Amino acid sequence: MGRSSETFNKREKEKKRLKKAQDKAEKMEERKANAKKGKSLEDMIAYIDENGNFTSTPPDPSKRKEINLEDIQLGVSRPQEEEEEGPRNGQVTFFNSAKGFGFIKDSQSGESFFVHVNELTEQISEGDKVLFERGSSHKGPVALSVKKA
Image (cartoon, rainbow, N blue to C red; front, top):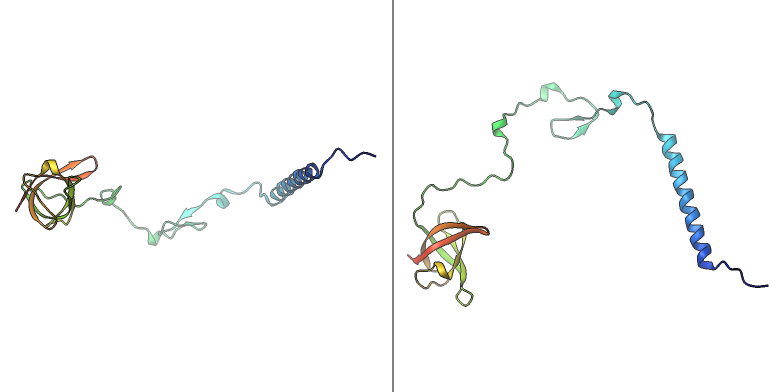
């Protein structure tokens, strides 16, 4: 007698395939048994309470709040910009003279400004008090025409 042409691996794969098909059929029968056909409209409606959570009960009208459309802010609110366009005071927090860039911290707002060596009127180093003009680039705020104070 010769060996069976069916190997162990083929038999295991066939068992797994049949088991998967059987599990799928059982799940389908369970879903059919638990399905509630013909739900009423009241069963399908969901409400949102005063805290923004979904509930199955209608909200209490006494807890209703009126909101003005002008009070709603979309996105992140930005601090109000100072109207002055004159020179600002700041201190150099970091400067790498080998690479030619650094950062200046504004003394009024505490905002950090990038400074490039091309914008310097004289040499600066860390800890120096400086005067500069505010500018902006695609990467953020930059200091322009920087000089020691």
